[in-house]
Length: 278
Image 1 (spheres, rainbow, N blue to C red):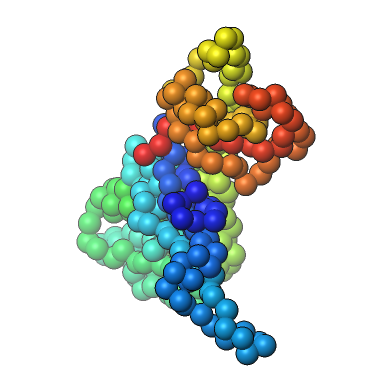
Image 2 (spheres, helix red, strand yellow; image 1 turned 135 degrees about the vertical axis):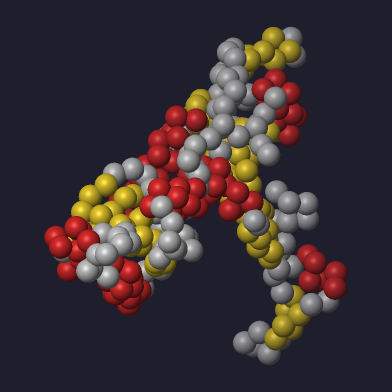
């Protein structure tokens, strides 16, 4: 809990190495500071009451967490919901071709934009490989290539940033593109959930003999530990010293069934998390 707050809610992102990065928090101060500075309002009964105050914050760390969690060795992978450009269209420019792939690409882009999608047409006179590299490293979720052969077949050739290529019908390009973007989002979500499930482990048990606490197991680097806790601040300090980890706080989801506290043996559903933090 933030000093002076009645309670604090923090949002911690789990990074690929198992450490956590706090990206947002909110604090509820009740009315203590309002009383100190005499900040009041008139309620429905025309009486003056002290306000309750809160602070909310979401920092630029959130962008760093997105880059760190979803990126790969080839660059960024932007989730479609927050990508500045969800789709980039690369017309294949062929000299002496009768097919104006640039004009057709802009027509497809206008169709997609009219459906609310964020689209960019890359009509630069560059080798296709250079364009592909540029947009791959920038993490655009979906790339559409449109060449003379694709136009003849009524298709745009799609490449998803998370992997997978397929032709999409230009006639139904909006629904097809939305499907591909949903698939990219699903892949990122599934990867993240699997990573979270693999990283969070039960904390080894603690035993006490003549006032000396011993942890029955080893702490592995790259893991977050969960455990039932109904102890005191002194117990918290013992756990942090023994593990070298930091209390993140109470998880929003408690245990489904009561479990004995690691330190006191008291049955509780309170679920506490420990981790190395940035």
